[in-house]
Length: 428
Image 1: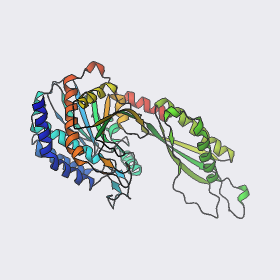
Image 2 (image 1 turned 180 degrees about the vertical axis):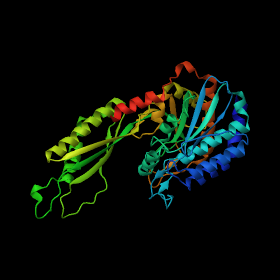
Image 3 (image 1 turned 60 degrees about the vertical axis):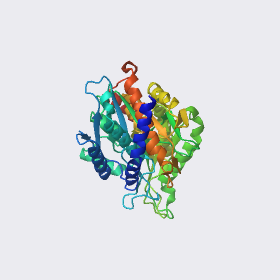
Image 4 (image 1 turned 90 degrees about the vertical axis):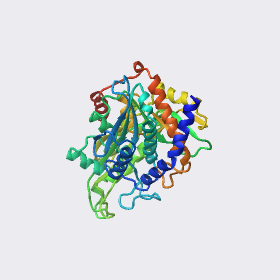
């Protein structure tokens, strides 16, 4: 075992600079979801250089996957990397034309996946596996650039805003039994750290269009019905209702007034307020959405107006699979180059890994090595040796541990149609 570990350490050391350079190239060329063409081309070029016989299956504009291991394996494992960037035009390395910036760490995910893939191929490790491992490169994890995605939906190019739900619809995960993701941890750490069992919130998006009656603001404000005032009452109601929201659900609501062409000499007759709504559980997501709807209706009625509500599904809550996390914890115990493991936490961020986790058990292993605020203007990696050399080796060992020891009887499987049923219950 010690000999095997020393050989893997040497391999990851030797390829470190190559992997780091690849990651930095992606970092400086960010692309938004369903537009990651350059990123995709570079990843495919890398895979072909490592393995000229590589076979790939393409899906949903820029997504693709490739498989290693025996065809007759009992369990099929997915290792997922996300291709897209965030819209953050004020970031120091944002694309000047698109506003895209890699301030969520997805560029490191891609590099980590390639580091692990190259290790498996060049060392022939996959020849000894019991099961298959498929590397899935998924577009559009970030929930943004929605006008563009609306266009793709209208064209019939996609059905879902998120890349993983779209892949689910297309059957990409139909023959896969479990999935492993990795993700940058926000915040700074004194020691090299990984985390497991960090559950995420689910969210949906609400739009309320308040409708009133326009009149001249000076001559006849008396017969108006001020839509802007309705939205102000709604915002006040949301603030006052927060004490009625269950604290253990970690509810997050952030109303904003969306685009408006108001004039100071006309009483506004239409204002749209948008907000995301985040909760820990699906049941409470529906309950909190009903409270918001009531607040909007009451605010409109209070000023003799009307309101039209629109609900758009975001992502389901993500509950990490504790059984799969045990394989991570077991590897950590004997892995001397990582100092700490953060176990069993919750944050109100969200990801489409929550949707996939409804169908199959999933985990997302977090890793430190960054500074600045995740999704912020100053986010950047500061410990590349950990991110591109040490952590990929750790991930490779975790995947091998799962391959050797996973009990398929402890896994679950649901269908895409079952997933749709849950989504429709929330949105309707």
